[in-house]
Amino acid sequence: MIGKDFIRVLYIDLTNKKADIQERKDLYKYLGGAGVAAKLLEENMKKGVDPLHESQPIIISIGPLSTIFPVVTKAVATFISPHTGEYGESHAGGRLAMAIRNAGYDAIVITGKAQKPTYLVITDKNIEFKDARAMWGLDIEETGRVIREREPGPGKRSIIRIGKAGENLVTYSCVNVDTYRHFGRLGIGAVFGSKNLKAMMIMGEEDLPIANLKEYFKTYQEIYKKVTQTDAMAKYHELGTPMNIKVLNSISSLPTKNLLQSTFEHADDISGETFAEKNLVRKVSCVGCPIGCIHIGQFRREFDKGYEYESISVSYDHELIYALGSLLGIKTTDEVLQIIEEVELAGLDAITTGVVLAWATEALKKGLISREDTLADLEFGNTMEYVKAIDNIAERVNEFYYTIGKGLKEAVKKYGGEEFALLYGGNEMAGYHTGYAFALGQTVGARHSHLDNAGYSYDQSAKELKDDEIINYVINEEKERAVLTSLCICLFARKVYDRPTILKALNAVGINWTDDDLTRLANDVFFTKLKIKKELGYSLENYKFPKRIFETPTMWGKMDEERLNRLLKMYIERVEKEYEDWSRGK
Image (tube, rainbow, N blue to C red; front, side):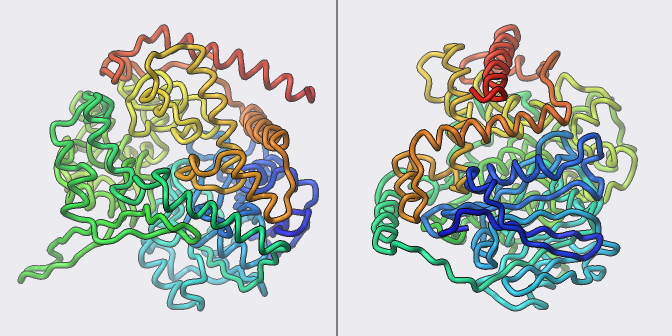
């Protein structure tokens, strides 16, 4: 809580419709965001209990700088992932961080299960448990519309909700945040669904007391200029992350057709440049960000005979174009947007959905599964068949879709095809086939995300791949990112918020930390997450990488399996040693 030495936590018990507020001084040393959310998860999780059991918690946390400094826009959610069975963490922008702050909280802990479908209304004055039975079965868009019509506060409120995928406990369902942002990847949507929690509306009117306004404004202006008047973030506003499509394709690093290829013959047709020229209609920002990195594209489709058309607006970025574009062999921007829209409405994670469908396409061709299983003629480039399959995943219409609704890890146990299942550490592959640092980084990252340590960035910038440097980079980058995410700084602003800038911003609001304090925080958050994972049974001993990643060239040529296994062993030995030292308080 800004100006205070405690973290203000709202505890919500859905089973008994009760709420409690605690001011936790012991959490202050974790600042907020990922640090506080990880500690609250450690306190509240139930070891040995199913991730979707009602006793398991959902945590959402913001940081002391949230929305009062430029690009400090994220809220962090933690949970036990029903997808991996491990530590679950996801970040989302939109208006959520502002709304939580204005409601007067630093963190929210939700436990229990509502007796019937429910949506929560959280304000600075009250906590309400409202009937959501009429919304159960509605898609993301309709649910948002109904809550907007029922609840006041346009422009100030944040509305987060799940779709059918979350209701049906698909382990890679997400939570939609204010239409264009998401808590994605590791299945927090299913955790909401398991609690009969359809949505939350959060809003508040609390003032934000800042003691030294002169110093605050001075620091704010310095950071604002770095954000808007340097090249540090320019690319995110211009083409945005879709600029990566052409770049990765040119260096043989764009996963295509279930990674049968690392270049795509239609890459130019679905590039960021083509999206901008044909589909881009506007750019929007999260609250507290002047960049406008959220690119909204529009496509037109016929909804009835007699020349009846509608225009659909959908947000797009690199990961979506990769997973629902090149990986499925989709050749046009309009078709990519059409598939993205289906994923959005169902409330599915885009990356995992695309990777699962790419595997299913190849498995169908190889005869591991049949047309009776898929109920669709899955074929690379066939947009309408993928649209059918996405609905089937969300609805879990038969045994096959029930199984792949648990992700590739479960699918290959039943149907085979492990050798071409694009999995790293139990999570589906992100959109970079750049080399060893990416492969290792996503495998060992705390949440098995490419964003944990950005190994793809090392692969692309290194002049020579050196094993020791890869290990150092992956570990050190993840620790530094633990500082950024504990402050809820958008990772796009990582070049703006170096350590001196972070300390200046903290000091400007009365948090007089030092560089040593940040180093202590980085280690505490990094190893707290590892401690949680270990308590949940996490281990990379005897881990096997999928064969496909060694068959298809990266920008460095084909990877050598023995070398990647050696890197994994080096990483484990180094981190285990550091973990023992940290556990002993060294």
